[in-house]
Length: 220
Image (spheres, rainbow, N blue to C red):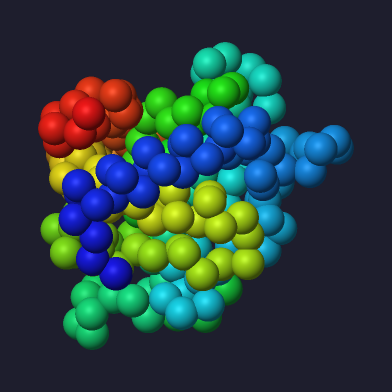
């Protein structure tokens, strides 16, 4: 799917309007009404698009291990079958091509306690056990992220697909910053075998101001 930012903005606005009208913010459409477990994936086996194989899941870190303003966050992935032939990761799970999670992480999307997005963030490889590709490769493939056909809430699906399209430039810049951070760790003498596997869980952050973004596009 290739959605232009202006079209994506309208989808985001419509989704937020619908959620406000129904009184059901993002997290209430995903999480059970009670017995929420820290760190668990919601849904349990991730939301997987039937056509593209893109996916997402939501989870909540324990208090003290997250910004108090954050309720939880999404992790968004492309499936490796969505990558062009010849695209090579810079780091991979220990299981290599036999890894169960055959995915590459686009970004995390943090939301506040009202269900409003507050920032994007780029993680280190070990955080989601992904196949990590260089930022330029990811940038070339961002328009393939499409989760409109998972079995989860349709409004959440549409919202996430549109958010990636709306913030494609910012996500790309953030992934480039992620790679610069990794290069800095390398030049500082960090063990190359440890860079992707230990510490430095969040490598770059991009704040979100939806009102400013919508105004930038000239939408009233």
